[in-house]
Length: 116
Image (cartoon, rainbow, N blue to C red; front, side, top):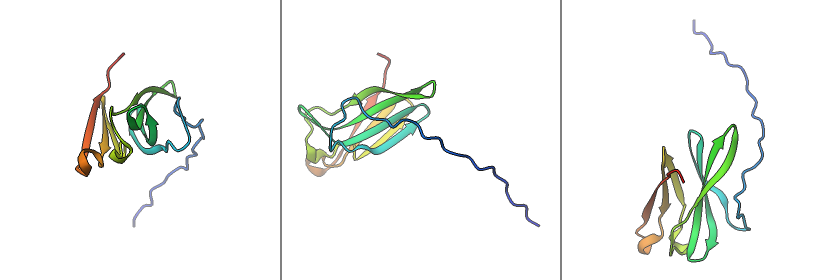
C-alpha cells in the first residue's frame, strides 16, 4: 500500500511592490526577471534614455527588504536591439540578451557586479 505524501499548506504574504527609482510609463518593468539567492535582475524592455534603449535593474535583499543597487544599460543601443528580451543572473554575473542587436544577428551582454 502506498502512503500519501503529507504537506502543510503555506500562505504567501504580499510585500510592497518593487518600482525602479526612475520608473516611467511604457518602461515595461518586470519583463523578464532572474533571481539568484538574495539578488534579483529585473528587465525593463521599454526604458529609454540618452543613447540607450532597454535596461535591467539589480536588486539586493537585505534584512528581508529588496533594495535597488544598480541600473544596467548598453550605450548606443536602439529600440530595435531589444535589450533585456532575456536576462540571467549567476552569482555576480548578469547577462542581458539583445536579439535585435548587430543587424538582428543578436548579442549577449555580460556584466560583472562588483562592490562600489
